[in-house]
Image 1 (spheres, rainbow, N blue to C red):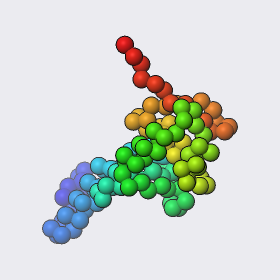
Image 2: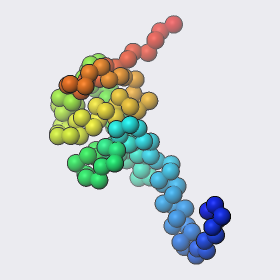
Image 3: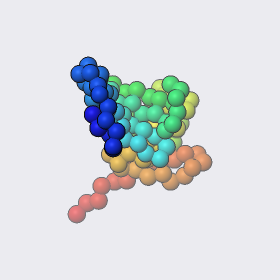
Length: 126
């Protein structure tokens, strides 16, 4: 394998392991300002606080669709308290409010920082 001007010799086993680690890392993560969304190979979708290493800053959904259903059930204007009604506690509630604001698949925008509040945008009609 060549990286820049350096050449590395890898066994077939090591090369396959490296390829698998790289492809799963590169293919799944979407990094935003405050959060990271990751589609895992097992179908789960993970939302985590950017640069956090504690599980308290992570929410694992069975799928991205499950995350979408949570968003769809929230009111047009919502806060971390509204997210908490879905059974989420602590910093995970704020994490998801931020993630919904940052992820392009969720049509909403941050309208207040105290309390952290997001408003869903309605699609424009022609």
